[in-house]
Length: 109
Image (cartoon, rainbow, N blue to C red; front, side, top):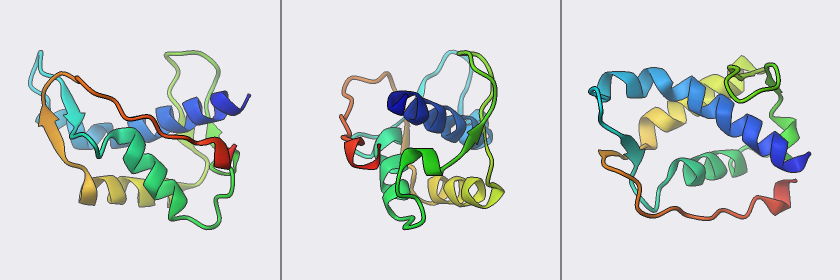
């Protein structure tokens, strides 16, 4: 169940920043975050910066079960804050991922 909360948070976070990425993504090109500031690292740092979020499940995500279903934030304030944070700090490159960072979310589960 804990991993599911993290998966849902990541899906909602990715979906909410898609409008920032779409204009940068020509057909057939992959856009990714520059290592070591990966998407997951950014989301982790953003999450840690919010003292009201003690566990991943505190960032309530709404949407139906299933891989292809859109997830969204129940809090528009948190969603706006994440979108602004990503816009300000994301470093993006056109390339295929060669390295991934591993973030230990255990503390928040």
